[in-house]
Length: 306
Ligand SMILES: NC(=O)c1ccc[n+]([C@@H]2O[C@H](COP(=O)([O-])OP(=O)(O)OC[C@H]3O[C@@H](n4cnc5c(N)ncnc54)[C@H](OP(=O)(O)O)[C@@H]3O)[C@@H](O)[C@H]2O)c1
Image (cartoon, rainbow, N blue to C red):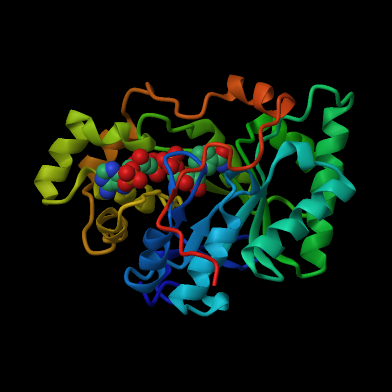
């Protein structure tokens, strides 16, 4: 993937002309964080995009992995997110600075508002979202961040931002796999020039056991994960699969040397919508009853402090 920024198949171009690698490595507090998997992704598999969030509690570990990989910082597209308890002019700037510090970088490539929900105690939610968005615009002006966006925003949430913004979000990162494919939201984003990005592209592994996905994989002599990721790529939707295992990180990166047929895509585009990984209804409780960042994080092979 050394040609990630020169080969148009391997990146998307955001509406401010920033190039974003179409395949990234997910990291999170769910299911563990593996230092060797991140180093291996950068060093041996050519990944140049890492997705994380303050909430996941692993930003400082990513800084270590980036350093160990010896890949220059300016070749890596680093994306992180602001948790709703940090929304607001001052709080968001502080959260951004904290993420930069932990990530060992004075800038971030992509900064996202993690959810459209805000603490229940807030009386004017739209005002808070607009004020927070304004802070991201200022960070963009100051060149502390190369692109700004949102995550888990539906049309009605995007409307709140679009009503007041001077910069249209570059990205909306949402759950996306054949069993959760929000076509109307994707169309809405396309119309507004917001790049739709997908998370949980393997539906946390559940989509890998599907018989249709397995049959397509067999036809192409590929793994089910490669079929799901290739489908996302052929839809021109950035995908950020997560794995703690080096062989799976490699496998997930090998999706640029085969093509799904129109028929395969047609089948995958029209699967029953039966799987939701991130239940929207559980988020408010998590915002109102804050647990520490990275509260579920299990660390695998983190090198000791020097
Ligand atoms: N914005 C948001 O609200 C939000 C929400 C959820 C996720 N995300 C982002 O999206 C990333 C990915 O999402 P996700 O972790 O929920 O789900 P995912 O990438 O769809 O699936 C990850 C799961 O699949 C397994 N796996 C990975 N590659 C595999 C392969 N080739 N064969 C078999 N199993 C494989 C992993 O296990 P092993 O580790 O054991 O390999 C892990 O259990 C996250 O890391 C995060 O960066 C964002």
